[in-house]
Length: 498
Image 1 (cartoon, one colour):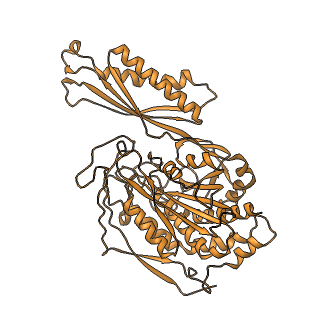
Image 2 (tube, rainbow, N blue to C red; image 1 turned 90 degrees about the vertical axis):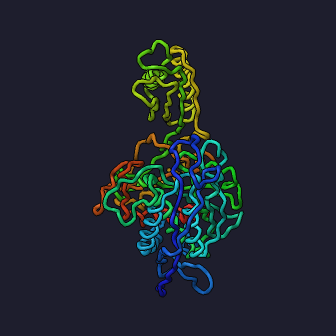
């Protein structure tokens, strides 16, 4: 049914947020921040963003109904009926302008973990415009002594019957950015306006796609059997925002969700292709900081010092043997030192050196075993050189993201194939990237999808890796991500109801 366009105007936020470390280790608050490292937001209401909600986004006779969806839930067909594909595809593509506007606005104003004040405000304004009720204050930072920012910017919205005796599933998107100086070419109209901060991992796209899905699900809400819980999550980039939301009741609030679905744009596979696999898809992850303390002195008199640079260098080299000589060839793991900081002058041996790095593995058991071995190597090497050493780990290590094998075989692989550009689900090997969606997948059956975006035909190259300063999004995949969200939600509820 075609209705007159509904034009909704929302004030866009001019974002001011502090830079932050990508690692969850403490830094001092900047000027204008409180002790938690949160800058007071400044909203410029003179900059107004026109958000075009699609023409179909209006109440029909005082309710949100969709005849095709009602027939889908009320009919005798299974969860893989083709009837929904065309209508959802149409509704997703109808939102093209909305998706582009939303994503570019979010991209211009990135905010790092636990400081997503204005990002959260923007999402809330959009949900209000869609007549979607939500709760806020999720993902409060429980480690402000180690990670700057008070947090509490997560949002949870339920669409559907809201009944505890009917099924509930989760759709999740993350929203935080990275402390990276953007160098992407060809996007001057929406390049990051927060110097040193960038959406280099596609979280602006993830949030946009979930907002697009929310608008579709809302306009058919009264025809849905069950509840779709939308999880807008802060602090994925090292802050364990998903874990905080679980601790705060995400999975125990009625109606209790029984399945969860998430996705990530993926630059190494063709645009529009959807990939996933049963079992582990993303690695368990831990981060470490090693402070090596020696005795400084004149560089011309090294015999009067205990050189922390030599000690730290030995630590770096000795850590390289962990994977090659202590891990079974049939297991996978990574130990990488990514930062080495020491000294300020060419003729001074410093008193200390700082190392930072990460540990990755495909199981939690292997991760914890590698962490123990890292500690042993670091301590033994420091003792050999006569230095003291302090090792600090992240506040929360990430578990692996494990796709439930049964859910994958009986449901997710077929829906993924239906939405993939070539009609086939791409099988993919596990990656050593980490994802705190793994905290959700530990608790309830879940599937995490990868949405290909690496072969854009226009604009800057979109095959730069995640966290790269030249990372660019193929915006043509946004409607496909929206359609994947909506199909997963409706078809999962149908299958659970059956």
